[in-house]
Image (cartoon, rainbow, N blue to C red; front, top):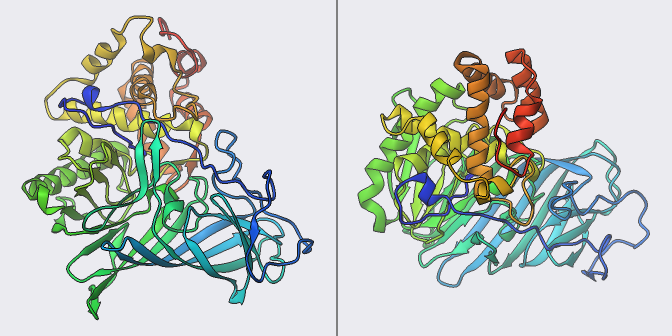
Length: 485
C-alpha cells in the first residue's frame, strides 16, 4: 500500500487484488483531554507544573488522537530485544526532538507494555498512562524551540491492532519464528513510543537483538556486521532519510537473502522466508527493474537502497516500508512490486500531512502500476482507464470521492483506482510532455517533504497554463460519475 495497502485475492490482475482497505484511528486519548484521569506513575510531576501542555493529537481532524502536538521528532534510536518463543519484547527508545512550544507535559503514542523508566535530557521524568497515550512530565519545563532527548524503557508482549474493518491485523505481529511488522496507518505505537502520524517524519537508528540463527530486517542499510554473543545476534540498521512512523519495520525471523545492485547501481536486498525461497530471485530481479524504471519516469531514486521482503504471515496485503516493501504471506507479481516501489516516491519521499489526501499516495502508485503494465507490453494505460470508466453510474467507485478519504473507510478502492483515473484524465487534458514533466517536478520540489492536493493542483495549473478546477472537482470531489472534465 501507500502506503500501498493491497488486499490480496486469488486473481492475477491488480483489479482483482485490490480490495477495500480501511484503517481505524487510535483509541488513545490523553487524560488532559479525555473523560477519565490516567493512573499516575511513581515520580509524577506536580499537577500544576508551570508551562504548557502538548496536545494529545497532532492536528489531523479525521484522526484527532493520532500523533501528538508540541514537538517535532528529528531521530528515533530504537533498541529492541525480541524472543519469538516467549513473545517478549524489551525496548529502549531514544527520541531526539525539538519543542514547538513550552512543554511542561507532552504525549507519546504507545499501545500496551509496561513502562519502567523515562528520562528527559538524562533526568528522570514522571509519566502517566491512559489507553494508548503515554503522558510525560519532564523534571523542568522544556522551552519553546529547545532541543531535547527522551528515553523510554519498556517491556512486554506486543499487542498489534486486530479486527480492523478491512485491514485485519497490523503493527508488530508475532509469527512462529519472529515478527511481521507493517504499521500503516497507526501501528508504530504497537512496538515503540512515537509521534505516530505521518505529519512528523524522522530519521531512524535500529538495534535489534534476536536469538542466534534469526535475521532482523529494518529500514535503510545495515551498519557493520551482525554481532553474536551468548546465543543472541544484534543487527544495526540506519535509515538516514526522513521517514514517517508507519513505514518503520523490525521484521525478523528465518530469511534467505540475495544482495547486489540494480543495473543503475542502487543497492538491492531481497529477503524471503524459506517457504518462499522459489520467489527470491524474481523478487530481487523485479525490484531492481522497477526501481530503475521509475527513476526514468519520476526522477532520481530518493533513498540509498531498494528491495523487498516476503514473510510467512498471511497478512493479505503489501506495505511499502521505506527501502524494504513488505509482502505478507504471498508471492507478489511484477505489478504489485511496481506499485510498492512507486510508493518510495509517492508516499515515502513525498508524504501526506493529513490522511484525507491519501489519494496522493495510492492513486499515484496505482497509476504507476498501469504505466508498468504498458511498459511491459501488456494492457495500455488507456485501456485500463476505459475498463474502469465503463462501470455504470451506480457503481460503488462513483459513490466515493477519493480526494477526501473517509476516516472510517480510508483505503477504499476508489482512493486507488479513481485516484489513478484522475491522473489519466489530467494527462489527457494537458498532454504527455507536460504530464510527465509534472511528475518529475512534483518529486523534485517536495523531496523528503509533505504534499497536499491543493499543492498538486496548483503545480499542474502552473506547468500546463490551464485552469483545471472542473477536472479535479469532477474526479476527486464529486460523488458521481464524471461525464466531462
